Length: 528
Image 1 (cartoon, helix red, strand yellow):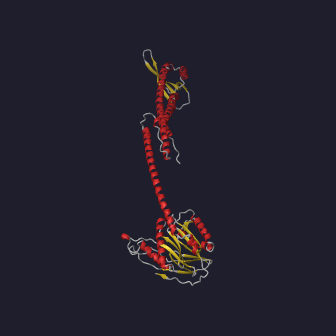
Image 2 (cartoon, one colour):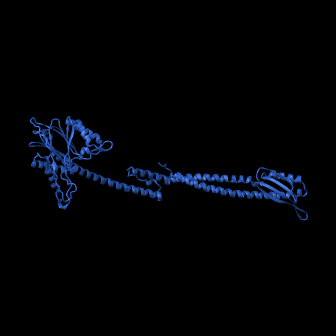
Image 3 (cartoon, helix red, strand yellow):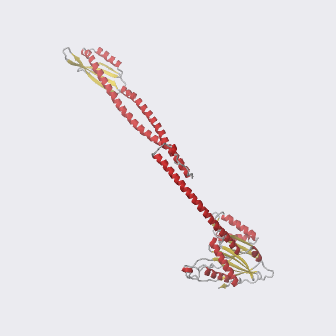
């Protein structure tokens, strides 16, 4: 996370750096100027002292009185502490007549002046009798320069601090405080408070600079956003209410459709009349289902069927109504003694109803819809069950395990594989399977919704192997307990995942009559 920096601190830092740079340059320039002036003053003083002292030394030098000359230059060094050395030479002689010196500085820290010692005669004659050399220390020049610059530097620092304080207060009042307020208002707008406004009355009267323009622009923007938001919220409420009303109407229709669909399913009395025990696990993916099951009485026994139609929800429910009507019509016309023939009849009726025999209505391509169906004709008096299936198997559970009778590997109503859209007329036969009824047998018919349901830790399908194992373990016990175990296992396995398809599982046991004979099991025969 980036650390927030203060604008005032950044501006003050920039001003401080700029002022310090300019002030340092000004101090250095002042030092150079003041030091030059003090150096010139020292040079003029040295020349004046040398000129005056040279006139005073003309007599002793002429008379070669080195004691008098020595006393004079000693007295001069006592009066002027800046003098570091004085040397008096006679003309044409390298050995000084008088000399005094004070150590402590390098030659670079001194200035030296030299004056001739001139003797003025009575007749106006001028004669040079010697030379005076005086060396002055420049230490007082540096000290004088520092003494002159200290007030300047102090004044500069005070001015800088004062300017920064005034500038900081002005910047905070005129710029930073309005910007902080704008930032707070922008954050409030981001949280949904669209009534936030910049109080221009509390700002400077008649302010027309950038901050004033920014505040006015923010207020106009906030007003526009609030107006648009209010309008949008109003429209959203209206649309939500309209959608809610539409959804209620749709759900009312679907719930009513569920009642209609439930009416085609067999009642509990019908199921109990021909079956010793039974259970139905019926879970639509949506409110209505594309699966349905049948249990109806026929002259020589009962018919039990389970169907899985194309789709789910409302389209699947339409298909169940159509397929259920066609199945009942075929049973009424053909009877139930030949389940394979009934499947073939339903196949033809579905093709015709969905215009899958030849060209569809208005020249459009034929639909590709249909259903999977398993049909069992139970003959209690004969102790026999005849099964025919279109992609839905019949599972038989006994004490010896689970036996699967597979149906034919094609569905009802669909175009055969490779059949062109305009030639949906191919018809295939189905196969009957006869089973001898014995006590303790449990029969299971189910669609693929349960086996295909995803779940578990890896999101895999429930699987047919898991279903067969559960049937093997509990299929010989009470069927209501088997249903509870299947539902609990499915709920645990699904673990909140969305249901993928309609689920139907129909389990039953047949009530055998005392006079039921044990017919021999026949092989399946073909039905046209």
